[in-house]
Length: 344
Image 1 (spheres, rainbow, N blue to C red):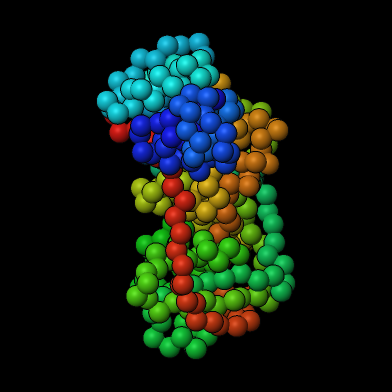
Image 2 (image 1 turned 135 degrees about the horizontal axis):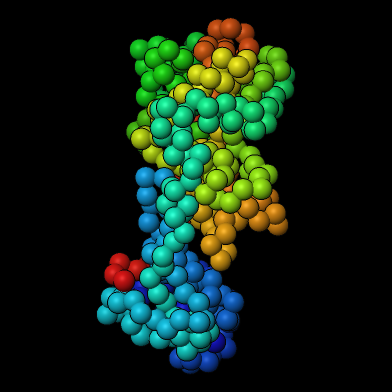
């Protein structure tokens, strides 16, 4: 129906080329033979990627797109001049209109358990719910994971890879000056992202093994609930770990109480999960979170990359051991990108 060469906006053109099918047949719209061809389903996917995902607005907790589209409404947005003809292509090809989206308020943080976590008077009771409703799991003996160090003084010294000294604690998501934490992951690329490495750094990776079974609180799962998103503990925790540093006070309190309840550590979603998996945050269908739809919960779970937080000094305490240490060499960095409008 269309091809990548039909579009005037460069971002749309590049995305359409990426998503389209190679064919030397002339485009039905513009007659071009070199552009990648798009059928109706791909055109709808392109509209979602550019106008919906491309206008995703992050809030203190949660996020929502500014633009949506459907076949029932006419276009009422005010795009940049170079996008006007392109919007007409979408309207003609698949009969849709673009409009400003009024999200359901849970998408921007109006979630009761999350508000209870923000409130110091109700925080501990809500964390008790988390400890009771989220599952326990185990890092089994001999299970392995990775830990990155950047520019260590003595890279061959095993103690360099244990938990950071106490005077460095209190800057991460789960650690505090009272509770130091060793962070790691079974996903090496996420470890690299988490450490914000650069090409100038000397990077080393320790491969750890569990020396015994370690009991962990698993906050990375999609909870099975009967509640709406507004009442969802699952949504509250999901938003908490996708939020920035303003959320750390809450997550550190979860750590403290988890340790007091006999856990050796926590499995939690990496802040970089969506960059690693390529997933869109807070996806909905007719305003319902995909995390609530049984057929989509496995898909939602696949978006999450799990990080590992072990309390205290597990290497010194012989709870884990080092299998080997390697220097890590960055030889290639790639970025997956798509685009969105700048005016609407």
